[in-house]
Image 1 (tube, rainbow, N blue to C red):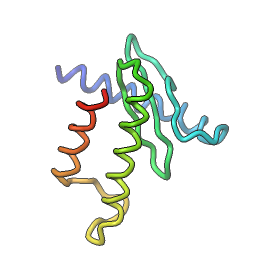
Image 2 (image 1 turned 30 degrees about the vertical axis):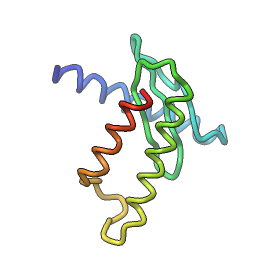
Image 3 (image 1 turned 120 degrees about the vertical axis):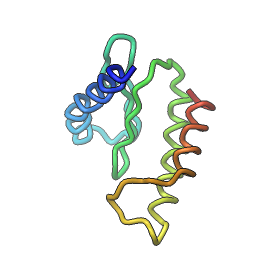
Image 4 (image 1 turned 90 degrees about the vertical axis):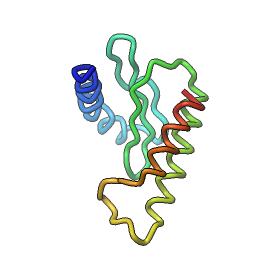
Length: 106
């Protein structure tokens, strides 16, 4: 189980180079199927930060909705005067909401 988690992290990190290249060549915020590994797909939402999702879902509308709502949550975190931009998000509320959105859309 732990090995699979590391493998998933590796796939996402490997896709960062592809995402960086695509960010310069497209104006789209949502990039689906940026990279693939076995039956898993990497999708990305490019805002001022990159939200990356490794998934096996074929529900493109659900993935877009997931990214939109996570982006809204992220903006709320950034607007918090106690949050230091660039630091790790440690809010349990944020984590709970993202997990709920994943269950809802993915």
